[in-house]
Image 1 (cartoon, rainbow, N blue to C red):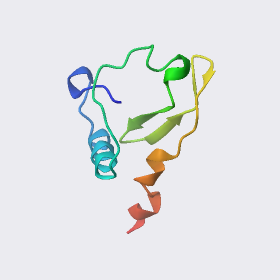
Image 2: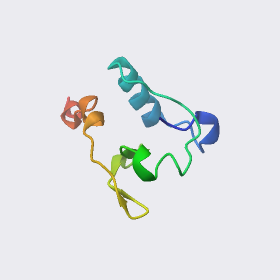
Image 3: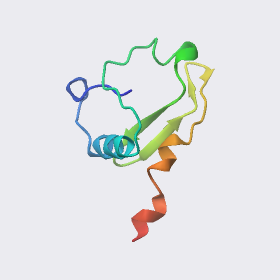
Image 4: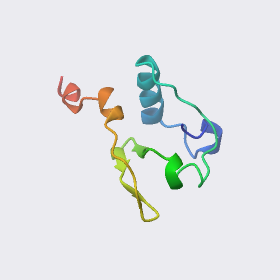
Length: 84
């Protein structure tokens, strides 16, 4: 799940790249408003912050709640591919 572009400050080239790769791998990507309830409690299985300067950052804790560390995003991105 990711917020729709209309609710973001910028559309984000990294976001678009990640969404394209996830979809190409057969992952279901839902674009909708994300509420605090979506990322708190047992509903959230983990999340990432994306930034074209910093890259992809796994969020391990939110509001004092430890989140699972899923390597699902790692399946679409190998940093060594950038060395080509």
